[in-house]
Image 1: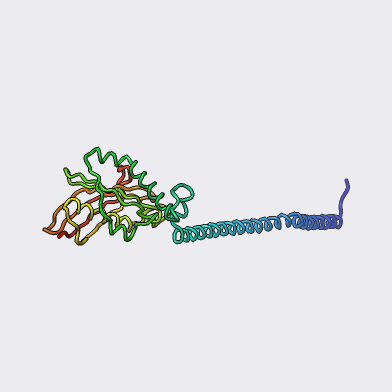
Image 2: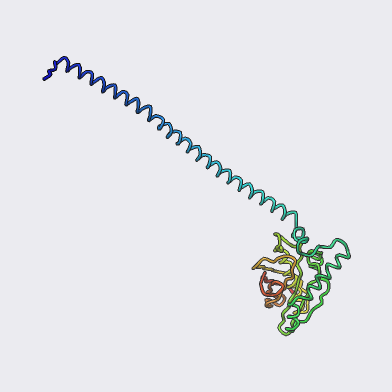
Length: 269
């Protein structure tokens, strides 16, 4: 049996310890060499993700600014058109009657509107219901303010039923009377309503109105341009010996939709 001296044993243990230390150092270096790139990759990926997130945020902000810019340009263009172009300028060449430029065209334009007025179904319905057609003298309110091609180009037509003391007027509202595009201005509708009420009281009471004391207007539905509207009296009430209250409403040309309701108080002689 081989016997080992203590000196040999010490030498073997020292050699073993040196080897283990070298192995540990090698493994540590090996781990560092092979693990570092992984750490750098993770850092690189996190930086890349941050960069992509920032790019997305910038794109979103740019898209928002672009939408705001489009809205601003569209709003500005719409405002410019409504301020400097009438309904006539936009739609006449597409759908509606071209407005006249000389005297012959004025006559042709008025004749075409008169033919349209006479062919309205509401006209024959009123005559069949006992309404008489009334031919008024020159209307000062309309003649001085709205009587123009594209405005109230032809005289309004009035009907009166003496049995029920009710009046009906038919007005053509042209393309120059718009406030917003396609829609008749509210002030024009108030003027038309007052004109009709004055004529109604004149027919019913057989006297002219001296003064308009009060006029209340309630708008129920948009009134579109280049169409006939039908106005009818609803009720007439005496307030004092010289003051009368009249209620009326504006409807579309077939009389099926109420557009405006109004109440006026007038002074009579």
